[in-house]
Image (cartoon, rainbow, N blue to C red; front, top):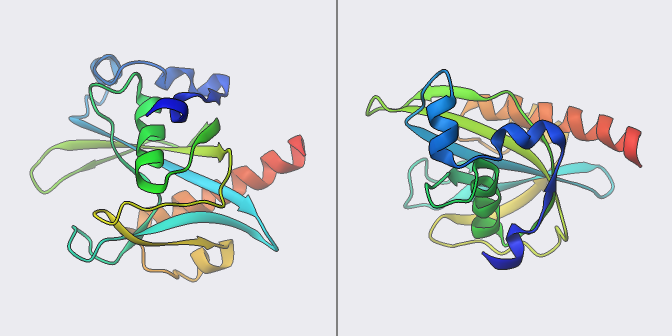
Length: 178
C-alpha cells in the first residue's frame, strides 16, 4: 500500500489502532468479521460525500455504498484495514482519520457476526477517484439532500443514517477547525 499508509488520526481512534485479532479478542461482542468503511467529505457548492456503486455481477448489484470492506489479519491495525480498503476501492489516500461512527453489529446469512466500523476520513486529494471495476462501476459525490431523498439506492437503510451522521460531524468539525 505504500504512501497510502501514511496518515494521522484523532485520539479517539486509538482504540482501533490494534491488530484485528487483538481487537476482535478484546471486543465484548466477539465479532467473526470486522468491516471497515470510510466516509470521505468534500465541499463544492454544497457539502458532499463519496459513494460508490457496486458492480453489476457482485452481491447487492448496482446498489450504492461508502468505500470499505473486510479488515484482514495482515492489516497493521483495524484502522489501517479501513484505510487500505478506501485506497483499493477509490485510489484515495487518507490524510487524517477524524472520527468513528457508532459500531454496528449484524449477522450474515451464514450466521457469522459482522462488526462494521465506519471512519470519517480527510483525504489528500479527493479529485482523482479511481475505481476497481471488479468491485464498483461508478462513483458520485452526493449532498445531504440526495441522501435524505434516498437517491441513490443504498445497499441497506442503515447506511442512510450513517451518512447523515457523517454530514453532521463534518459540518460541526468544519465550523470548529476552519
